[in-house]
Every structure is written in C-alpha cells, then in structure tokens.
Length: 336
Ligand code: FES
View 1 (cartoon, rainbow, N blue to C red):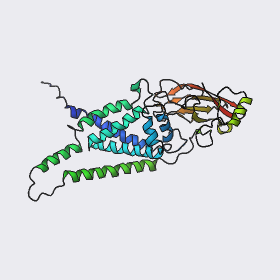
View 2: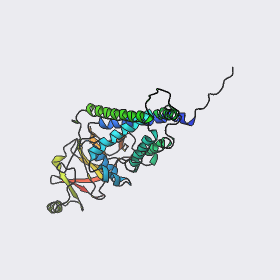
View 3: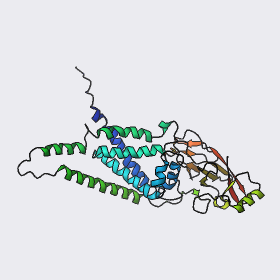
View 4: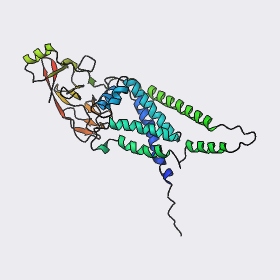
C-alpha cells in the first residue's frame, strides 16, 4: 500500500482555528461582562469603575482610561462589551476581517498597557498574547479561509465582467451594507439578551465603603489630628472611617496613604482587621471581598483574607500586607 503524507495546509487555512478562537472568545468576553450582575453595580467586586481605577493606576496606558473611560465608567464598560461582541461576530464570519482584527488588536494593546501591565513575567498576562494573535489577521485578513470577505471578493470580480442580459444581482456594496446591518442587529440582540439575563446584583456583596458611600478615603482633618495625637496613633496615620462601617465578614477598599494605590481592609469573623494591597499580583486588577475570601474580578484569583496568601487561581504570590489600626471607634491606615 502506498501511504502518502497528507498535503500540508496553506498558511491561510492553517490560521482558521485561531480566527474562530479569537472571534468566539471576543463574543464570549462581551456576553460575560454584560451578564455579570456586579459589572455595572458600584461596590461589587467586579464593578467596572473599580476595575478601571485599578487599571489606570501606575500604568502607561492609564492616561487613556482617565481621559475616556473613568469619567463615564458604565458607558465605557457597556461600549467595550458591545465592541467585543461586534468584533467577535465579524471575525467569526470573516467579514471586514482586517478592520475588525485591527480593533481587536487595539483593544488588547490598551489592556496590555493597563490591565496586564503589572503581570510578571509578562507572558502571564494574556493581553500581549492576544495582540500577537490578532496580527496575522490585520496583515492578511481571512485570505485562504472560508469567509464572507472571500465571497465578496468573488462578487466584485464577477461584477467587473460584462453583465449578462437581464441580470439584476445585488452589488458588492449592497451585500456588504446588509451584512454589516445584520452584524449590528446581532450585536445589539446578543448584548441586550446578556443584559436581560444577568438579573439584579444582591446578596453576595462583601465590600463596603468606609467613607460614607463615596468610596474615597477620609483625609486627616484637624479634629482627627488632635484625636490621633490623643490616642497616640502611629505617625502619619490617616483616618479611613468609623469601625461601625466595617462589620465582621466585610471588607473595604481605600487608597494607600503612602502611594495612593488601592488597599483592602477586611474584618474577620473574630472581629480582627487585616489589611493588604488590593492590587492583584497576577495582572494588577483591584481585588474585592466576597463570600469570605478576597477575590480578583479579572481571572478569578482568590486570597486568604487573614494572611493574603493565594488560595486559588493564577496569582503567583500573595498580597502585600498593609497596616491599619483601630482606635476610638475609628479605623486608621498607617503608611508602611
Ligand atoms: S489579575 Fe489575573 S487573577 Fe487577578
């Protein structure tokens, strides 16, 4: 029997699985955001505003988020989710593949310069991998693959030939406009269905605000300086808020008095408070407190609320400990 090795695929066809993976993953990412009950709910560990603050802090792409996303975090979150769904649908169908891939690459590049910037080593943050995965499609589109773009190219070529008598077929432009309209309707339909499916956020919330609902730490006003001196608080202690706002089994985030980065303070079941950096050691997202553990909203890493040690997920190391003290019914952060 004459067994021959199968003919190798062309480079275009070999990229088809990667194109489908990117397209489906982007659709999934958009749906996952819009169907998360905490995504648009201030105070939830996965609230987009909290995530954006963490991404913008000390990263080279932070200025973009401060300019365009942080003023309207909910709008930005919904916008990004819909863009992800639209890019995913277009890439999966192979329609305007180069343009859609360029948008996908741009999105992942911004995420690499913000969300994944603190990932160490760099390849543990997935965004840089996505940037390079998009690149072949930005350069060559879906050529050599089953794709709507291929069909449209054939249509354009056939229209260059003289029309058959009585032929009234659609032009390439008509087909493109209709296909884009369909993609737009599908994006809004999928996004709307995901939003309706999410239900309301309730119950599991474990992160509270120490500072009277604004989420901002209370700076050391003169009266508190006096009280601090009386109580002999450590030098530089900054009042965060009343102890009553942090009941047992709850956590609260605040700005570190030394470097302004997010920290988290948790009161355990025994009444003791523990504080850590709230910057996830995996890729720098801001962690929250939920269901008795410290949780990272980005890739699901979890930490022990008493020690800050990693309990599951991708974070390579535990959270850096921070110092807080309670005195006179108030909680203070101590620069360390
Ligand atoms: S950033 Fe990846 S688990 Fe936190």
